[in-house]
Image 1 (cartoon, helix red, strand yellow):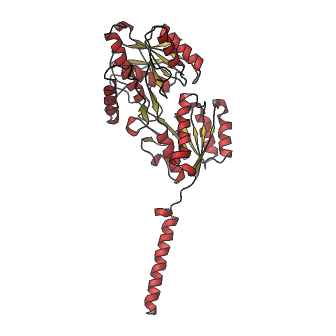
Image 2 (tube, rainbow, N blue to C red):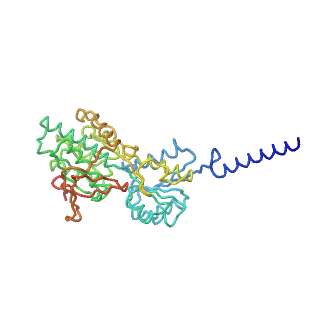
Length: 400
């Protein structure tokens, strides 16, 4: 009897030991989940639609989704030249993960990651994660060319309606685009946009004006106004303020036939008689996954659904990284919603090659560098940051 008691006791001790061991190595309910402090560096504030998309994610992190397990802190209106100081402040405040939200921060962010290996750094729109990679430095961006192309479909259908109803002649099918900088990110976006338009109106052309700043309401509005005065009947933008939308609405009030396609936020409330639609990147998909990975001591790139390229991740409609905002059905052409749904579905099924057709592209920095798009160009094939940087000959006109 005593022998049986000893065996039973040994068995119980062994089972307790196994349970404790499993808990120590992180299995089952014993796995420790950390609290996380999350930092953000913004080049603007919530008055700029681009920054506001990040601010909404920041607020949601600390409320609905993670609650008391996550605290956040942000540095706003930080010029790119002052990024290092802002990042250091977040490090000094014991942030576990830092999101730098403007392309111009990427070099200093990577250097700070090298100097602070215990902190995870995630750079939005960056393209340097895989150049001498660091385990704690990552880049991410939604494949926004997809949203730009679908926006172009919507604009093209409105343009065709204007031609069919005699508002404009076919030879007047000209669009305008307010771009921030002549970067690949901007060029890729407006190229996808005009290709979407031309899938509906093959004769359409587009004038582009650069502001050479990401965020200037007055300058963006002035550029849009100049494009309208030059005969552009639909204006789109890759800039951070509502200036172009306001310019279109004011022009409409003055009797001009002009419409607007926005970015980052719905601008229908700002321009109710001219704003057709907007598209945006949904940054929450990546940010939530990255924070959750840090909370659970996991590798970010192994914790998220998307197109993974080393320490860089991106995706489009298929993973919810890109979304179309409300269509203004009061002014959009008939059949627009059905066309949009069909295009988004083709992206989700990976059936769409946007950068393809009888076009020649010219590198604006080297005119001897050209590309023929008859065989197609696959955007975001090797990275989340856009890479197409050619100007379509005779289709896109850069205005000074």
